Amino acid sequence: MIQRYSREVLSKIWTDEYRYKKWLDVELYACEAWEKLGKIPAKSLVHIKKNADKVNISKIDEIEKTTKHDVIAFLTAVAEVVGPDSRFIHMGMTSSDVLDTALACQLKDAADIILDDIDKLLIVLKRRAQEFKNTPVIGRSHGIHAEPTSFGIKFALWYAEFARNRRRLMCARRSIAVGKISGAVGTFANIPPEIEAYVCKKLGLEVEPVSTQIVQRDRHAHFFTTLAIIASSIEKVATEIRHLQRTEVLEAEEPFTKGQKGSSAMPHKRNPILSENLCGLARLVRSNSLAAMENVALWHERDISHSSVERVIAPDSTILVDFMLSRMTNMLDNLVVYPDIMQKNLDKLGGLIHSQRVLLALVEAGMTREEAYGTVQENAMKTWEAVRDSRKADFKELLKEDPLIKKNIKPSDIDKMFDLKYHLKHVDEIIARALKEGE
Image (cartoon, rainbow, N blue to C red; front, side, top):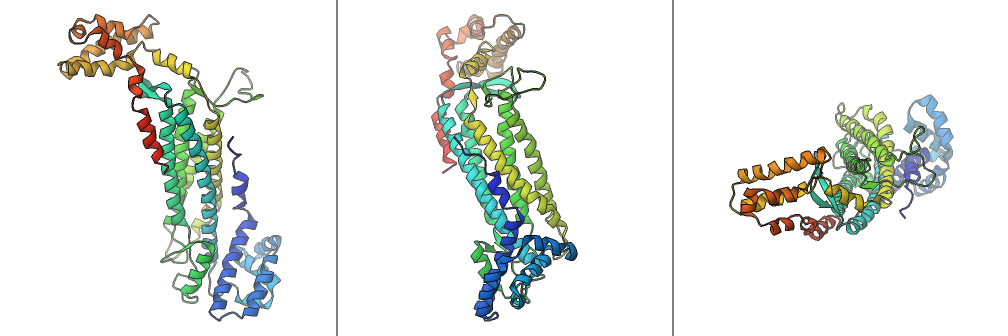
């Protein structure tokens, strides 16, 4: 059984406690770097590190009511518990040195949790792809029956897509995991690059090669659009499950647990609520990615228009994607599959799903494609109309009785063209290729 989703774990990343802890890490590592350069007495550094973490969060909030500036409120509260040695804290730095570097840590940590979520999903997708690789199901285009496929191929396709999503998120994680300690406009006028290098190394971040007052927001846009792609892939799977669960289809169904209710009015209802929820949440994550792209263009070396946006989209998008992945993993792990109904749906059109094999056989026998297509379609439409009118429909028998077709194909050969196994002969190769995406 897949573990319960980790929303509670990821949510902690966006608490005040976690954020202030990361801010303090940035400040203390900067002090360590200054001490190595001989700018802070060793005794003072010991005192700062011993007392700085005694800062009270409620005190920071109280001070901010007056300062209307979160970093100044934080520094003032720290100074109260550190005393005179606090003059060495935040030396040569600007607020965004702390904010952006700490945000990079938060997003990096969130990405690690989401990557773990994807790994859990890939395990389920791989198992179910192999479980159903030889289970035939009708393939659909435009919502209409096309040709047979394998139900396992559906899972293999999703596996390959989420393997790509994992690589995308790894790339976005690298892009976002950068810090900057370069001062008010990024020139290192009052703080040397050595401080930045030390702090970033301690935090497991790369150094932003060139910055203004901030880390450039194309990095954040990359990160949040990657989350939007992941959410869109989740919606893609959820949409498929919603269709498969329709009463007229009913080839697969979300787990319906004991005591669950589908409708306040209709006791018979079993609705695809998990998938529907996922489709709705994907809209939120995509809209947040648009906000992230709007943040790329700021005035000159920095304005504050991006800050309020990120306070919303960073926790919302990461928590949502974490939740969505966990929900979908559990849903697919427990998805109820109905092979018998799949077979009934395969038989629903009286054999029309094998029309292409007959078309190609006629072409191979010497007919022009246009003539062959017209001949097969004429018999197909008769079958289609019979199905529509609830009359007996047998495409194969119509083909055998057609003089032009009998002239080119033996009846026994027509029988062979209605074998479902023909369509699944490459399924092992397809699934093996898909699973390589995860290597």
